Length: 435
Ligand SMILES: [Ca+2]
Image (cartoon, rainbow, N blue to C red; front, side):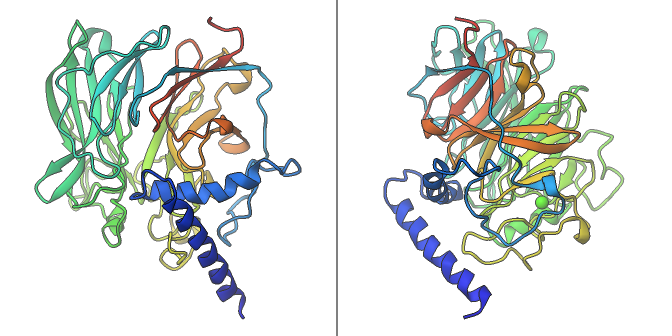
């Protein structure tokens, strides 16, 4: 038996195991995030027993690919020295996809399926009634009410921006809308859709959907490539907003410095392309670079620094493989050699990354400028230590909680807040801080 067919056989054996796991007790079997979930279960069982490992990863790699440079994957394991308090502030919510601290220790939190927008008070754990005036969404599969953020001038404008999956002619799109939060915080007024990531597609996967404001008051929006073959190939096309980072004004217009403004064949809002499904985005506190985390296929999740006009390679190249075990395209991982941007870091096996936030705070000094990423499956928070643009350490936090961590934020007080698909809001802070 050749080496290749042997590894195929091993893979299918694993696949059967994974499918068997998926069949028993996974409540969300339609999307690939849960495929990864089962994948992770095999990983976690081995995770506890390997203290000798120098990487935060403990399992063998899924792929045969070699990194383009040493620091690109399987960084040395690091451990937080600070004693931490871990508190569940709220439980019993739905999939809490996005959140923003709009007022000291008070969050706006989206509920993906019910499309509700809630106010959560971190000090007393109270949850508001749903805010009126939120948009109609398509909540099938990975769709629903997704991210939320506030305008930089929120104190005056009270503008709230949200992303969601929207039904339009021909299917669904990732949409961005905005509304004004009333003074009594009971409703969003004058809600309007400002941007739709066309073309529409009749599918329920890979909406991307994170939004973040830059220093000029413009928005970066991330999208997904809608998952299926061949629609996912549109990630490479400059006449489609699928699989892109998009840069728009608060009215949904392309920012006039965007890289393809002069290109008649390209959509003006595109900032970068060749992405799979970006669900995490933040600016590095020191460099100001825009970082994203991108959900890969089986393995090959990527951390990227986004540069205007650049192509990140999906689905031409990848450090992952298809869920079927097949190679992606021609099975080439080398991004740079093929003319694409190499990821700063990739995970193999997966970290199933969702929302992320840099720790831009002094409260826990050893966390300063570290990146925290919600892991859906494996169910933990990933802490990434970065020096000079390279990942030099990695830690897995709250592994014992076994939650799908959906979004991460850092409060002004320096607490790390994590929301979960199981409807919980965690507060992680230095022991003795606050209460
Ligand atoms: Ca890539």
